[in-house]
Image (cartoon, rainbow, N blue to C red; front, side):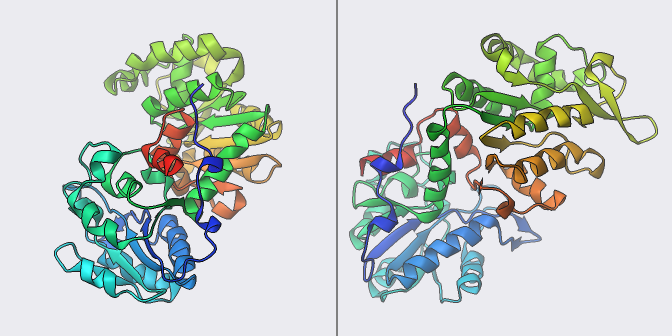
Amino acid sequence: MVKQVSLLTMKTIYDEKNLKGKTIFLRADLNSSLIEGRVVISPRIREHAKTIYLLSEEGAKTIVLSHQGRPGDHNFVSLDRHAKLIKKLIGKDVKFFKWDENYVEEIKKLKDGEILLLDNVRMQPEELENKTPEEHAKDKFIMELAPLGKMFVQDALSVCHRSQASVTGFASHMPSFVGPCLKKDLDALAKLKEVEDHKLVVLGGAKVEDSIPLLKCMLDQKMASQACVGGLFGELFLVAKGVKFGKKEAFFEEKGFMELIPKIKEILTSHGDKITLPVDLAILNGNGRRKKIKVGELPSEFDTFDIGWDTIELFKEKIKESEITIFNGPMGRYESSKFRLGTKKILECIAFNRTFSILGGGDTEKALKMIGLEPSDFDHVSLAGKALLQYLSGKKLPGLEVLESG
């Protein structure tokens, strides 16, 4: 069994009774969408703003490190706009400094409770280099910053799946701690170990290559005792069982999904009795209307875009029987009002039943907005994205490992 890190082996920022006057490097994830050049106030920005406020109120000198996009992408921009958003959210001044300014001297001048946001860390060429934590600890900008700090706080599970300078480079220089946002993620995931049975994972979406190892590991390691699989992922499971889809088969071939069928068959061989698949689907018929089609009625001359009513009821029964439900990925093309039904009904069932709910995935966040649910309707909505999937897939996360050893 793959060993997962535990809060028992890591210190949280709450373990420190006195932060006043201490210079803290906080790794947050302020990465957000851009609309017409404007930064969207995302849940990530809101949550990390709370941590920044907390540290400031405790009297810490807080230096925030984050990224936005990747070099070459349209959303690879400076964090000056992010600084203004955080200032607006917390009602405190946020100093902002670019990498070509004398940020070292400015950090030295910080007074208790003051906040400084450094520019996009991915503007530092060393940030994205493929190195070990020990090698990143010797990166030029880490060596410049490290002597100025007393503590490092990792607050974003979303960046922990890669060894990057601002994620793993500080741990060997100073005591390192888990921040409030990261603690919420780890506390929720710890529930999977506390409960022996009645653990359900509901998987959908189109990121099949990520979902295959996730499902296999969760069932292998008993992190889940049952699975409901919908969306494109569920359709490929039906293909693996011999179902012919008709028109949509050309799409499966074009996207290379048929190459994944052998891996899906392996999961069915090992855990087929634990996996619930769609029994009906929704198509867009020739009149442009949503129509239900039973799996037994396939192949079809029309594409499939959602799970059907019978499948919704089947999945809902599994959710009601579960003590914990993890949801990752929509049940269909939720962006269209015609094919939002499956995702909407499954998420409503998770939200309004007794099951302890953990939601993850970028699509999930968008889907909630479209169907009228709020993150507060669930026990935990992770901001982590791919890092959450890797954690649940049993992979070791470098950003957590350095905290464990720190």
